[in-house]
Image (cartoon, rainbow, N blue to C red; front, side):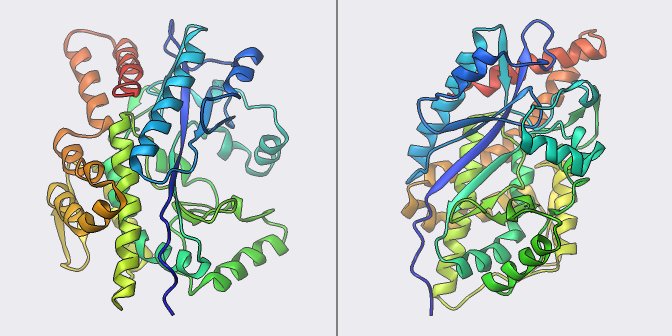
Length: 378
């Protein structure tokens, strides 16, 4: 029996770096009074992160993309305004261009003390930020089924969101370096294929029963059933600097799930490919972003991201129109044509270097660019 059509409501979590406007480096500490002010956003919720220079926001559940647009804009403005009163600013990017992980301080909370004790040096170098997109899928078996299928598209979402070309003051040569850091943690990357919810739950029970993890929240895969909400949580993407890009990526993920559900009602399914093959596309997304191509496994060949973007929009057009997100999904080809945050960061850096700046000064210019672009369109 086919489950009832989900509502596909949507919410987004973003993690911002807080920088000192004078040095453009990450702040060492957020003052207690500032933290208290951040606890009262106009909508949604905020929370500290493992590193003291980070702030996480979570939007309210949104019925559609225009509502999500308003919520996310309000929250970016709110956090920016609060830290701005202390000569600080936020940047929405998955790495800071030159901050050093060894100089950061851990947030003093029991949860993070336990995490540091368990993961040691691996978690201390986790100076990265991400964007997580939650889409409501109430039926648990359907949640697993759609997770199995939509995993195919995770490299596409990563390529479209790439925003982490720099690490510790140098150009990594990758458009998205964040996964290279995050993959050092256990239980990351692509999830296995599960037959149904009970199969997934047996997997979780083995780890919990053995005392390896406390609960499913310690599964940090690129996509997972949320342990807190009846949602399928996409975690593969970088943090988009421009809010328009963030909303486009979120809208595409939501529409892909709706498309896969509609295929199921027509007795069709997206073919499940080996995780090792999808990992190849993940690497290409990390390395090239939207500049190059991904493997189309159905055709058995590389396809330019521009062509893939057009195909994705055409594939989900009906669902996006029904969900009220078509104008957001239609921005996807523009991301490919104009580049992602990673492309713009590298361009700003190279221009500053060509004008005679030293490497650190050029990276400072990149930070200024990120500060401005984080609030562009907000």
